[in-house]
Amino acid sequence: MSKFYGIGTGPGDSSLVTVKAVNTLKKLDVLFAPQPKEGGESLALSIVKEYILPKTEIKQRHFPMNFNDEERINAWNKIAKSIENEVKSGKNVGFITLGDPMLYSTYVYILELLRGKVEIETIPGISAFSNIASSQNFPLVMDREALVILPCTADEEKIDFTLKNYNSIVLMKVYKNFKEIIKKLKKYDLIKYAILVSNSSQDREIVYHDLENIREDQISYFSTILINKENYHNK
Amino acid sequence: MSKFYGIGTGPGDSSLVTVKAVNTLKKLDVLFAPQPKEGGESLALSIVKEYILPKTEIKQRHFPMNFNDEERINAWNKIAKSIENEVKSGKNVGFITLGDPMLYSTYVYILELLRGKVEIETIPGISAFSNIASSQNFPLVMDREALVILPCTADEEKIDFTLKNYNSIVLMKVYKNFKEIIKKLKKYDLIKYAILVSNSSQDREIVYHDLENIREDQISYFSTILINKENYHNK
Image (cartoon, rainbow over all chains, first blue to last red; front, side, top):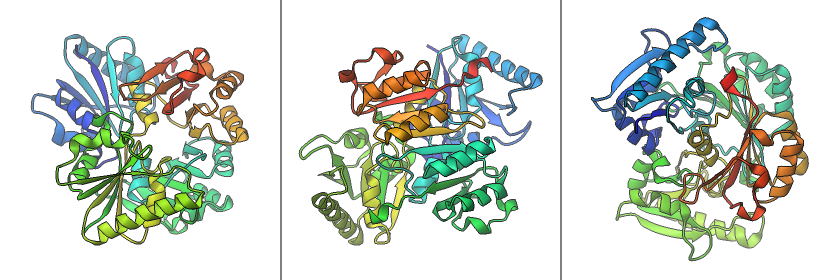
């Protein structure tokens, strides 16, 4: 039976895709890939390109990021409708998304538009934060500890609340208000337990250990801060 | 140059291993696999067995879970020392761990014992919670939302605090005090937004949507609750 597959590509390195994702990519008739803008290059597509067979038709589409706008909702509806039609005509249709499909991915909007209309299978991916932790040998949580994943676009109150009350924190979208975040990390005495990594596992990856001396204009869109106050080495 | 590799196996299904993990397993001279008890079957080993070449020597070892005990620390030190010796003799040595190595894995103890002594490369894995979310088409977080991952072995105060203040929560180790947790999910009006999955991606996987009617003795060691109060479908 034909299906719609949502596939997590991981953070950038093609080898961080799962075997299941590779097997799924190979059975697709059609693959939808998100483009940053009309005519732009799809990062997700560049990650999985080596696994796609010639029989698969690739459709790059621009997916507007903001969902709360009529024009954009119409664009999403149109793409969802065309996926629905392809699946109903007997084709296996894929949609690739960076990182993990269930964590901060616009794939969720397509999923919700197609739910109940076609069979849907979602295949997880390695999140940037998980790859940063492993590639930096930076343990995130052990035993009874909690981990909070927080976008820096959250309410300021929520950011302060989290920094104050938890020891292990992943901060996403740090480019938005970088200076303010660094100030807060100093205020809550977290800065010495933090690392920042841009473009994890990509050619342009940069690792920063001294967060106080990063210039704001150095911070790329794909930057993540990991914080862990625990020191497992002395336990 | 020879290295020590920590490799995440994902939650259970062999196809949820990354291509990088497969490639790394194929170059190992020695692979250490954790056993639940002396002579027991290693779940992590059963996941990756199909990727291991005949040249790789497999060493199953019992790794005591509690680290705060002299006898156990000695056991870990002994295993770390033997890994160190193998790597220094020119061998590529691997250690496999369920899920993701940087999230609640005893691999971290071995990592800390070997840090600075041999070259270490850690390869991330799909966490059970991430696979549950994808396989159940259960989005965890979007946009400006925070996600908290919390073991139910945490202080009760921390559990209440998290359930009260966050909308998206992953509860791990729910078998420990299952009845109490269900009571709390009712108290904070979260139970209708929750699912529970045992043994995700394994043959014995069970999915529960009606958490109030699960008997405590049905709950296996590998059970996770996902909670998300947001409803993306109507946005």
